[in-house]
Amino acid sequence: NDLSGSIPASLSLLTSLTTLILSENALKGTIPPSLSVLTALTDLNLGDNDLSGSIPASLSLLTSLTALILSENALQGTIPSSLSKLTALRELGFYFNHLKGTIPSSLSELTSLTFLRLYDNDLTGTMPSSIGRWKSIEHYSVSRNNLSGTIPSEFSNWSNIKAAYFENTDLN
Picture 1 (cartoon, rainbow, N blue to C red):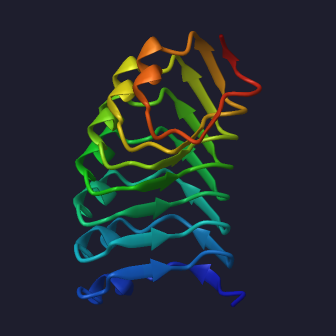
Picture 2: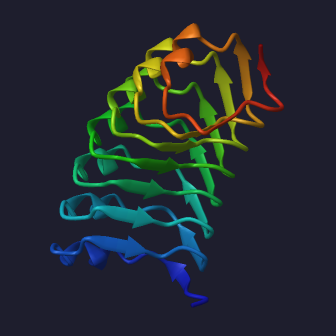
């Protein structure tokens, strides 16, 4: 739709909203923390814009979310460990941003997760072995980050995995 400008904080008045897809526009600015009052949301997709700033930890209040897509933006900072409260989440996409820090081990609480896409960021550290507890994961991509160490043996527990991408990392 070629929407431009910032995401209006007034969207938080739409308290019955279940799906908010603003992807593939020209939105700028930060993600309004006020979106966290939209507790009926099951699908939040703000991907492919020019959003900046950090991922608001307040998004962890959206406990009905099954999909959280913030990919292809200019987001910085770390992945909030509080996102582990989104236990209904099946899809998490933060690829093509400028996220730093480690992959929070608390994400292992997202036991319904089927798609995790964190590629093309500046993530560092090792792969948390606790993520090996995921039983539903089908697609996992952490390519083109600055991860190091070994791929934990717990990943062999992923009986539903269809694709796992680790290229251009220092994982072995």
